[in-house]
Length: 426
Image (cartoon, rainbow, N blue to C red):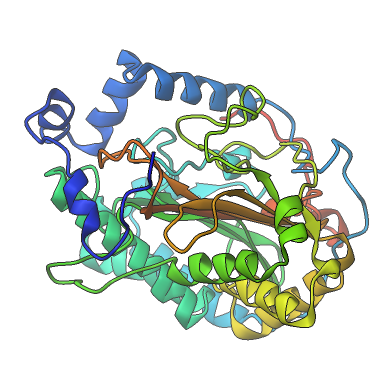
């Protein structure tokens, strides 16, 4: 079947029937009622089954994503990455000053709490922890966003805000702003904000999930998830807001630039839902991407072609793709991280699923011992397109071999408590 046209506004031919029970019910519920009905009612069954699988995965001790089930040691080190830690701590302290005692009880977790791992990207509030922005007063909400703004790069913050605004636009399209809105995101603190001791925070909700670990002037923003359905706001206050187009354009340019022999080796499946895929390689929620919510211990074998086989121009495209995936990091930290990733180009693989004509939807992954990035065009969740389309995108980044959540760094911090085995939930 041909992919839907993905030009501006083309998603509108796939707007859902808002008189259907799914949406008339959703429109009457707040986020907590919506989640409760889902968890207790088990509808739709495939998504409820995925939720149960996630809870099962959450009980596993943390190891980290690997290529073969074995964590490769000594890949990460403590270093100065130029993070403005004093300003970040000041913003966090200002937020704390705004919070009531009840809110403080909700938002504060131990630095080694397993709840770091219980983020998820659907609109269902499956792990309700911390404080939710759409339930806060404007000064408190602004204080949360100030923490995010001073931690991320300006362009990374703009991307995050873009994802939030698109989520608000989706809520307007389906008439359910209490569930999907610009501020339907949770914020959680792990540890005490400090210029010298490790701490961090989680910011998560529909199509935007950021896990941020800080130690002195070093940062780990991993794992993160960013998506959009649709990925362009075409009317209203934020008309023109669009995200993830660079990741799409650069990925396609890289695949199209390869010679036919390399394209054949990089293309691990010709179809986005290919009969040749083994059982479980595709599922309703994640579709083709492998390293999403609760997949902290996934074994992801290397596939495709080595970046070191590519030409200088093609490697420059790889760098440009990675630059987009590192966009949340401030400039100095981003440059350091990119240099470290380039050191592993001889072990970095690029793979592709689907066609690679200009209009084709697709999936790609770049994977090395120190980073995994994925890009995937999806079929509709709120929209009705049965086939993947370019207006619904999922992207994510993982730091394999124990690097997620700053876990590989924690044993290196003198005097810091560190619990490498995470399981259960308080």
